Length: 468
Image 1 (tube, rainbow, N blue to C red):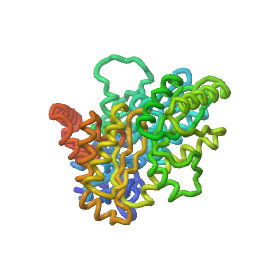
Image 2 (image 1 turned 180 degrees about the vertical axis):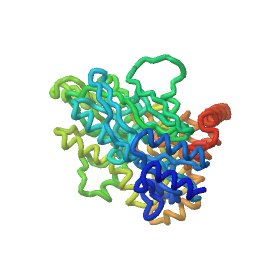
Image 3 (image 1 turned 180 degrees about the horizontal axis):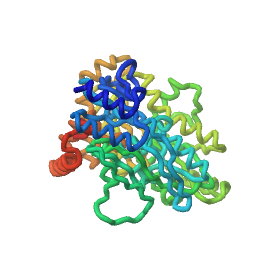
Image 4 (image 1 turned 90 degrees about the horizontal axis):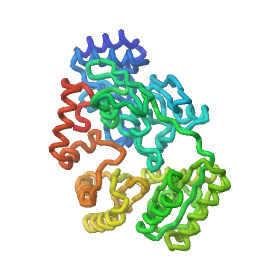
């Protein structure tokens, strides 16, 4: 059966675009290299018609499919299992910019377009596509939408869901739904677009998207501010919202140990402020003149200093300095990897609950696992923390994860639940958090999700074992 299926696949796509031999690790190993799967083959379609043909063949032969974009996910949702029976459907060849509508402020692209390429295409038209995240040089738009990616500008522009107006999707049966509408108002039945966004390839394969664009801001101002506590960081966020309004684009928080790791492993990077308990990276972008924007930004920081919300601040005086500040923030995950194995948590909480959550979770972890080091950073402006646990200094990382990862997760997720949060903010569920979802999601919600899955993919062709 496999030989017959692969022959049909090669006839459909061309032999050079069906990979079944050689080194397929780029498609079979997850981004964090924690899972090494084995694919039946890798199919590389060139367009939507070929995606539909592949899915029809899969339904006919009973072959399951793992859709894959840039393979930058963190929850083991875009690589095959180890059975050797799953087909990886790579959309990387589908990377065309299909059309612009500058009057409507929209851009339509193939799902395999890399996020950075979409940003640059919008910029070439004098416009902005604001989705921004550390993996933007590799992550694709299809993957961003399938996981409802967040990133650093959710505070102002929203998640990937809010930045998408329309989709083109191939169903599990190989039918094509053309929903590439640039309309901002369309109340004609159920919102199918929102059903597929965030579904992690389990309900359909996103092949193209119509995205929202925005005017380029006239001025962007960036600063780092030192805070003595998370409570002060939250108070600074409230003051920044009041003074800057919609101009507040980014508001990131970084704990002392997170930045100490960056200084340790990347000593060449600048550190604009001396070590503080918490460092906030904030950015505004608006349509005012650069001088006016800078003055307003500095007035916010001066007032915060006078009110005791911050201990010190450094304002970027050039685009290069602004990029350097962001580079420090984006290097935390890399520094963590250099330090050794760790347990990652992507959590969301009401901003008002974050200080109390951190105090409780920190204490509980230290009591249960003495010596663990908390790498706490993330998007404070929208309540999303990357609350990671580094093994004790000098400890055996692999042994610690093997013996304690489940218990560490339980401590953190119980605290998240106690403070009305979510254990997955922007990374999704994949297979890594599937059992956690089964335990923590309400039975009613899970029942509805299973009913939707059964209705759209009754054969279980699409990304089995993920989410549900």
